[in-house]
Image 1: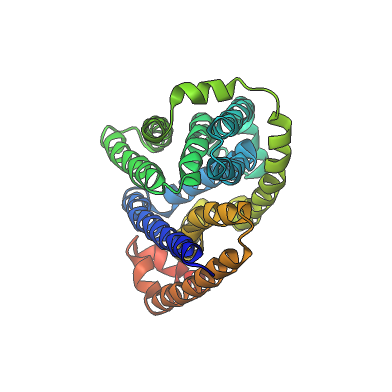
Image 2: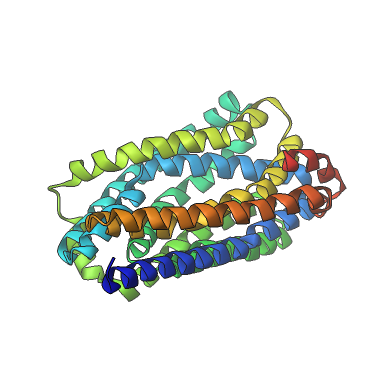
Amino acid sequence: MDAQETQARQRDTHDIVWGAIVNLAGAVIRSLRLLLLFILGRLYGAEGIGLYLLAYATLDTLNKLAVMGLDQAVLTHAARRYAAEDTDGMYEIIGQALAMSLAAAFVITTGLSFLAPWLAHAFFNKPELGMALRMMAWTLPFWALSAILLFAARALRVMHYEVITKATVEPLVILVLALGFYALGWGPSGLWVAVLVSGMVGAGMAAYMFSRKFSLTRLWRGVRVVPGRWRLYRFAMQIGLVELVSELLKRIDMFLIGRYLTVDMLGIYGIAQEWASTIKKIRQAFNPIVVPVISAAHQKHDHASMLHQYRNVTRWILILNACILGGIVLAGDALMRLFGAEFGLGAPVAVM
């Protein structure tokens, strides 16, 4: 291995480490979500949190259906086009993915707006969920827009755009508006409006951050390119279906508890799941930066570099996961009771 290859490998390792640190910082900043749930627990109790988490889980799953892996397709193909210095092709990939994901999001949003009351009653047996789903449904197009633009930035190894948008701005908007609307006496409806407004603000922030690195004019040209869309969608759909099934499996417990148990029990379980999910964020923090690095190495047929980075990332994930797991086992009960005495029942669930 010559000096140039060694330098390139060290640069890739540096990018992975720095990208993971940025994403982990985003996960820490996402504690704003836990702060929001803490406040909701004090204001609305377990029942209010349960209704919010069930509505959010439903929308999050439908968002996977709308995007259908196009964000991951952008992450992979845009990185390859950029590595090959094909910027026109890169903008075509981003533009095509944006057009298709927005179209799907609007179709799903329209359908959910009409079917929300039926879904809430027939599937979840909770009629009060219908208004939440109907109001929050219009968040989907804004989430789809943010996903494509932020993943395009990831393809160029720019991680902090997502941290600013998804981990800081959106949770902060929900937190501030939820408190404000509660003070105005809006009740739970204020929370649904807060989620919708946060999606709008997040999409605007994503577009602004995107424009700092990319050209919006060239993106618009890419949106209008039709040839190649089906080929891109076929590639994305394979990833999207896997992600959709994975999301359903991840959420199936929430959906089943939401269907057969009371909303307050769902709220307690949901908080336990939030604490337990922190261990997953370690691996998720590495994914966004590892994919473009590996894609670029694959484009250059540098299999030795790919193996080197896989070994590094696997070792780091195992070490960090062990630390997080130990903290949850030792302090699970205390962490759960921060949200209220009734939430202490969920401590064993968090540990498991």
